[in-house]
Image 1 (tube, rainbow, N blue to C red):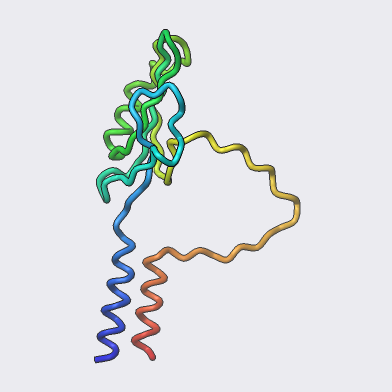
Image 2 (image 1 turned 60 degrees about the vertical axis):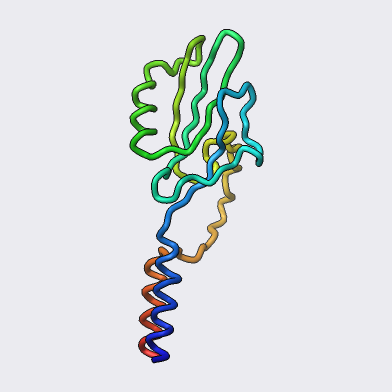
Length: 140
């Protein structure tokens, strides 16, 4: 019975990590880059899996539109507007990304690492880690 309880708890713990939720910046036609904490939203789990950023160049300045998006809709929109992304007047640029808050300001380039080699621990995917834990609990 103990084995069943431990296995069930591990399975629940591991499967809870499978729901994908991303955070993005969200704003409508702002004249500033709206990349501050008050514009952060949680996107719909397993539906909106990307962040979208639109930059519009109008007569009176540059406007930003940011939101959560589904990957299909975002990629279609960005490819459809690619020809209008010139950086000139009436330009519309749409970009998609899939990491948390990636539709915010551009990250500054990090300095190149030194010539010394740094060792990092290998990263196991969550599923593999859960499988290992489950196997070790059944063998004990």
